[in-house]
Image (cartoon, rainbow, N blue to C red; front, side, top):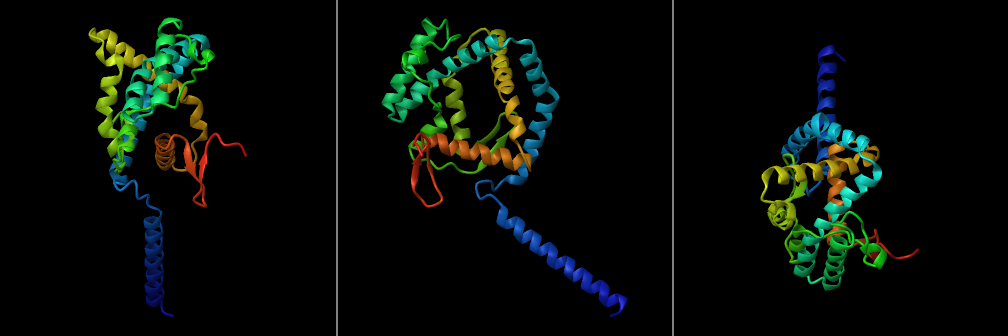
Length: 243
């Protein structure tokens, strides 16, 4: 075989291999993420901001804040979140859960000193997994739509993104009239949330973007279905079922 023929054969082989890889990559595309190219760009931007600003601040917050204080701060924001849980629970006709969350809000806002202490759980009112307007739209039959990564806000779906303004309105912090106080409260909530995720970063493996996307979508499905998951054989399983 001449060198020319060898070169042509090599190029053909490379072309076939590239085609096979492209086809394999196409098969691996997540149908829930049709805008992956755009999303990866926004994800890279968010990850840069997080690594340069948010994560270091969260580490500093966790380092200087005693565990008991950190728990108290988390409890306060969790208690404020019960407002959205109650409204969305009612909109989804989850009357039992809405009643539970109402009891938690009243008890923890009073006996728990504005939510610093979770007194309600000791009275049999356990904290739920949370409800938001994206879950309400799902309960009303709205399809999730494509997966989206929003600048600074992170992963969501088209449906859940539409629900964000409603969730913001139901957040009591939004209605604080004193702007510096409101902004400081939002910043504290952000640091508290980011600090709580520091320990989970070790579980991320492989492609970080895909890992976070898949984890987000699976978590949303779990929440929307109230813990009901489907096994490989199509049988519904309850997360509380004993095996």
